[in-house]
Length: 174
Image (tube, rainbow, N blue to C red; front, side, top):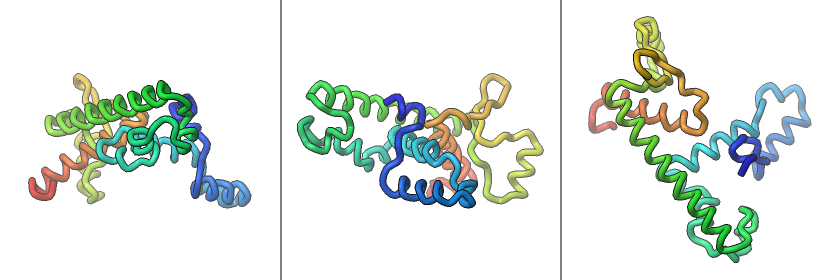
């Protein structure tokens, strides 16, 4: 759990294989820096993202299998108590993810949070020149970047981008 929170959990599967190739080829390393941190950040974000979290194998296993299933040992589940704690953690992540998502949507609808801005570079540059700041929260009269609020920055920007898209493309698209 501490490695997960620090985004330093060991890589597995394909990502581990790719990382080992890049380690063996130093000239490629600049293109794949800090793979562990990035992959773990995406993994953690997905655990908090409503609906998406249900498609994660760990989440599915913890919510559907019994504690004595052989697959559970990989998650550190060795007793019924361990399983109950893991399930409570998952339910807590779901609740926090829902709260952050609904709060982000409410804030975006009220102009208190920004996303990535329009894809048109000229339009985005004109917004920036008029004081708009990408990926930021409005606290009081100041805009504060939420870039470092891992794992929620992706949820915040995605929600704000959908609201921006709704304003540009209409209700049916959103």
